[in-house]
Length: 188
Image 1 (tube, rainbow, N blue to C red):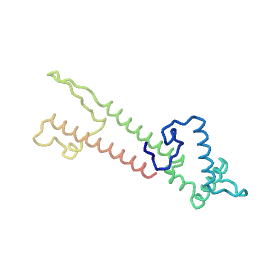
Image 2: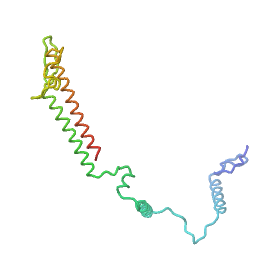
Image 3: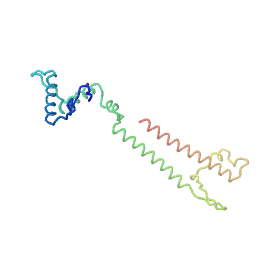
């Protein structure tokens, strides 16, 4: 039987001749090995206490001291920004919420106004289409500026052209209102 020359971390279960050790023999060998390990370690002086882990209260006090040292030169708002909260106050959040609600109401108002002026028209051939009527008292700019129907157009074509101009104006007005709301939101 070949023996390993590396130091063993456990007591062998067999002797060099191959006989199995009894439990009592292994126990005695383990005790002797442990005593030899303890004798080889440097002994600690009786007056020096063993180093221990800090208690929970000590760790808490150390953490508080570290935070106080870190906060010494920064304001609470700067600390919130550093922590990733953005430093927004409750007033900032209320203003942003009010702006969102105002924008939502303006969009709803514009949609309701458009829906009230939209009607479904059925043509003679059975096709259906949506027609948006102009508000009362509105005269298209093309007709206003010319004072008459543009040359080469029928009355229906002129009306469709005027309606297209009016729709473009309405879309521009809605976009301008939304852009103005967006600028107000960005200002805060």
